[in-house]
Length: 226
Length: 221
Image (cartoon, each protein chain N blue to C red):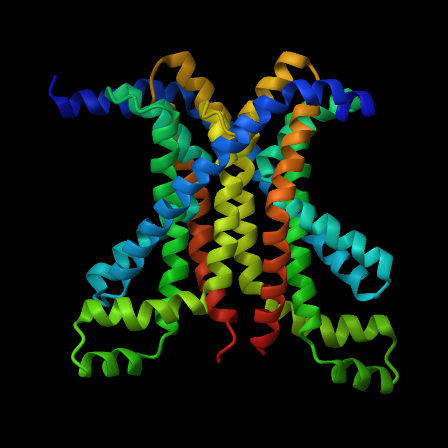
């Protein structure tokens, strides 16, 4: 066997790949589920916090800023580990899936709140005053005047952040979530062959490469021309 | 509650182990941040060669590593390479993975910075007799770095946080040490300690960044 053949036989072993393909695919499903949950709940919570903050209640805003800062400065893996290994001591035992979902959703919430808030504050005060004086209520002003302008501004930074945090689903493997990396790792130790890991890597590329390219496109499409 | 999360006895016992981890996290950061910056600088300088044969493969390279979760890259190096007869150890794997992953991010930022410097600057520098390399080093890069400083800092924050991945490949950094202490004591206090340490160290940077970002987004209008 030549070196090249031996390389192929080790890293791209067809038999091993065929055997573990179903595992990897089920991992893909879990990764997608996690990612969708994180994006929806994280962005929704972030927007909700930013709207709460726009009410201008002082003590509430300090609390929001503190929570945001907290989840921006803690490494996501630390939050996941703390939830999974720490909470049982308080009588709560979230599964690895739930720990990973909540942790990354909190992180996305923190980052997106900052971005949404920056977007809202970038709308000049005159816009608020003008719409309120035309008889729109606070809520109407927010929904129909401020947010449409603010959201457009937040799309490029939000896209990048969301992609970066969603990739963190791989961290779930540390707390036994059966997502792609978890499935691939256990397949490697069962088969003594790295081919499943190569499949897992390929799966990540197939999933995330189009997202990154789309993100790049969105970034230029919504960028403000200076 | 206090007994399990803020246990003073266990905190005292775990302190030396956790501080050891903190030291390693600092050392690791001092290694991987310059390494990532170096990788990014190489990519950004290559990107300033505006030939399509350079630009497209470069863009694909950067997007590839932006799409690839850093933990997957790390595990691939750590668990995959030994099958090719190459056993690198956790520390070296972290260094390589960070060079590739964070290099791609730093590269994007620096490229945007270089693009933001008007081409008249290069023309002026070249016409005063500076070589291409000199005008890049003395005229373009200083302005480029200043223009994207908030982004560079924000990425550096992410890189420092990312060093916690080292715990997965047995690099004895802060999280790894805390987990060791936790598994010995059956008490989550050491992990809480690690979290508090991360927060105390990184909070000032987060505060500063959030100010800079607010200003940047507001100025974009």
